[in-house]
Amino acid sequence: MKTRSHCPINYTLEHFGDKWSLLIIRDLMFKEKRHYNEFLESDEKVSTSVLGDRLKMLEQNEIITKGEDEVKKSRFKYSLTKKGIGMLPILIDMIVWGGFYDDKTEAGKVFIAQATKSREHLISSIQQKLEKEHLSN
Image (cartoon, rainbow, N blue to C red; front, side, top):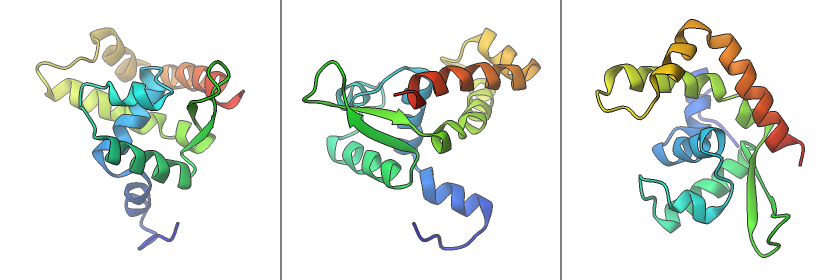
């Protein structure tokens, strides 16, 4: 992918800087969704055309991979790459920020407390889990 500039914020935004891409990554990281239809079932109600486009873009940017499902060979299973898992600290920070300012947040108080008081430990434990589930396939 050719970037418009090498500003780190621009580079990051060009890789996943839209709502739908971030929600797909959220679903892979925190909601254990791995299949197209599972992403469609998210509360935000992404359209099929947008979902297909974002999955393709995330795959092209090496954030996710698409592989054959072991159980049902006729469907695809999506996994985070090491580059995708590397986005974990960013998403944790977004959860903390949203949890702080959204009075009706779905983020659990225990999770927010862990993310603020022992951030590195939380990131490490989630990262190990993601690497086991997504990279060992």
